[in-house]
Length: 242
Ligand code: APR
Image (cartoon, rainbow, N blue to C red; front, side, top):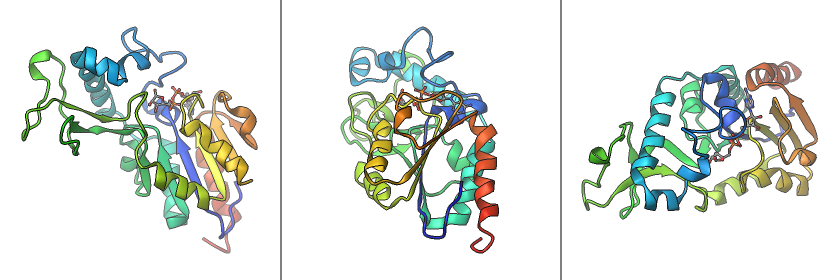
């Protein structure tokens, strides 16, 4: 990937970037959780009907994420951020913290964070790594005693801080999308915004995403196969700059 000193890189990641760290993707093989589709446990309706099931799902995801490590693709993104500084922006649909643990700082979790919870009444997110797996342990707010929910954007809810995302997309000159099936909006529409602005778009993943026609380049391969060399190549292309 050739970047000039004027370029601003906007990266969008999805579940695929954490697949090689051992965290299951949502769709495709292995994409079910105890026989449920993610849409059945990640909705306000599921929460209203069965908060214990929902907390069970997110507790299990917390447990899996705690024991996972960042992989070479997370590390490659952290490294290019060190070089690009404020010309880099990472928007992830993932709720795990593997990007941060790899060293990424300019990162936004548009679908929330696995290790935060929030009171359904006060709405203030707070750090929380606890596991809630039985009805008796479901958490209540310390202040108002209302139920506490995962700080996750569920289907039918609005992703966090879209204004900043669109502002960053507006400044970007290159859009790099990694490991997302292109099936969940608004993230799946970022490439269409990039097309309207005529900026270069690249997809990385082992299969073509649903919105494949919109990309200028599709690099087929896993995130750890493709990203380290793709981003290292950029480095060697810019000896005058780095
Ligand atoms: N490297 C890169 N991509 C991979 C890898 C890998 N090793 N393994 C799988 N993939 C790709 C798959 O080909 C697929 O296109 O990752 C993608 C995962 O797609 P989804 O499971 O649909 O995940 P994502 O697109 O992130 O889902 C979007 O949907 O369930 C909601 O809120 C949840 O943020 C999530 C959103």
